[in-house]
Image 1 (spheres, rainbow, N blue to C red):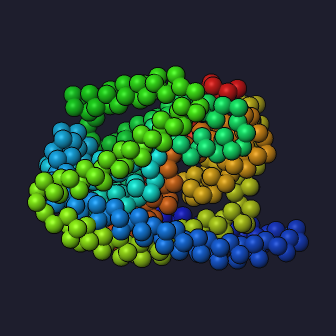
Image 2 (image 1 turned 180 degrees about the vertical axis):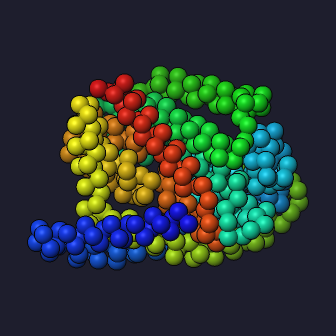
Image 3 (image 1 turned 90 degrees about the horizontal axis):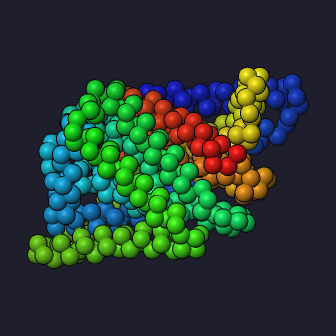
Length: 410
């Protein structure tokens, strides 16, 4: 329901702004630009879905092999003490726990192409437990909020963009991004737990969260001692080695269980194409709405309004130039990436604005995109508090990014 109102608002606000520009400012380019954006983003949505087809087919096949080989169930048993507290509506030891873990692991390593099909698989399994198929359940919402809060250990792509644009030390945003994404994930966890009345003040959750804090600190310490070349090589090698290890491990588990690995893969892979086709309408809807909003100039007006408000309060406005990346990130990953690159191009990769844009880009995931794709893949229309919790996690990430950006670079 919330997505419905937001989608309508994109078009109505954009149309009013464009009409004002045409009538009072004589801007005859605004409506053609908006129409061009609808065609361009419709094409982009289809291309994204088409590009996902092969990856979805591969990973759904691999997940089926892992499921029949017992690996997914093993992850489910391992995570059972934590997931019983965090996802109380999921039966103990259910295979979806393993799928959720695999998705989180892929996201933390920055493996977007692997994370999406793993997440879609988890959503399909959660839908099997859903008594009301058109309405999001509490476990679905908790899973997606933690997904969209974007906990990333190794932001490889951002460091590559910084290197390409001439940053003296492309990895200097690594620690700030890690800190910010940890805060946004923690905020998403707390906010969703409050909505769902989940008690986090128990021994299991406190030990888990404390362990994650120690792990993040260890990663910061270890990678912080490397130079930029070493960090890029290590992060890329670790991510891809783990990914290939998962594939080979699942196949080996299938061989050990004496299942027909090839037939199991084909059985699971058949669902990849169907899933890719199902998400096309949802992708078209959300990307076209975002494109119209940008083309009308509404995004620029929002930024100008924030700058005026901050200046009127007598606060430092240096961060405002980087805000387009932050505001675009919940709407479009590619759009936010473009904003980040533009900020580094205009202001310099080593400027405060350039670095802060990178932190914004790495702090959270594309909330509306993820919700549209994941819920759309299983036909859920009533998202309940998913959007609210996701956006609050995004807000926490934005505020943390500004504070940490000033702490490190200004």
